[in-house]
Length: 104
Image: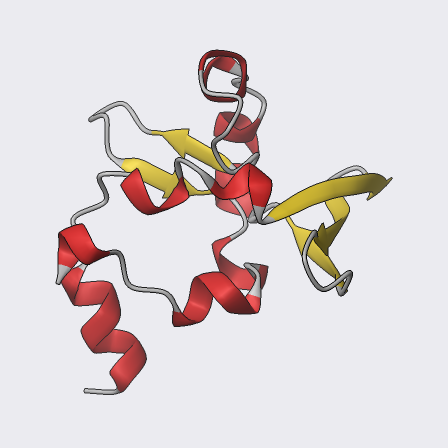
């Protein structure tokens, strides 16, 4: 099992770690139907993220960003109320390394 697998196994998909990410990075522009250029607000580093093909329908549900403006703009919840990262395959490097204290 890789370190990445271990981190994924520890996640309970509560969404807490993604609930306050809007002050870490922001969407700078939409560059394609499902592609966005984001910027780390502290460092200015830019990155492109793409909405995962299997999550495109759920991405257009804007109830999370509307109700929780500080949440990551790519956070959604599925029918079982589990957190879903709609850009999981191209998620920001910071998100790949981070493990929420609630999940440790």
